[in-house]
Length: 199
Image (tube, rainbow, N blue to C red; front, side, top):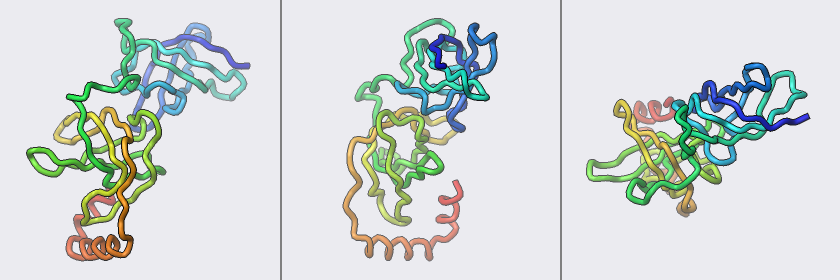
């Protein structure tokens, strides 16, 4: 049978896409919760300690939440905001996917600001609404993937999207021209290409 309970998010790892919840009804046993169970925004690492409503499958060998919803953003009891609503326009940027690997769950958004061209790491868990399409990009060419609206942080000098949304389709491209330019770029800068693929 399935049971809806309220518990506390013990831990959550966005990079690995799962965490654990504890609640009194299950005598403080750890209940597994995956990122896909959250319909209204995925938690971040700092969400540990927040209240969460979950629907638990009791019949599985491991207690597992099949549906989850954040109720607070921390022990203080404030209303949750993680991923549930769009940020203000002044905080967002727009760019295009340079690449996105569905099987790995991440990719890179490229955009221009006053300092130049910036590549922003984007994890699938931080996308509101539909996730990006699989797109491996074309080395040496401007980004032509889907248009993305996003917010970002620059912790330790590594730009990372903290909220993202697909807002436009990929640009039409000439496959022959793209492959020719990509091959030429790879042959001119093989080390740079290998570094990008290994991120």
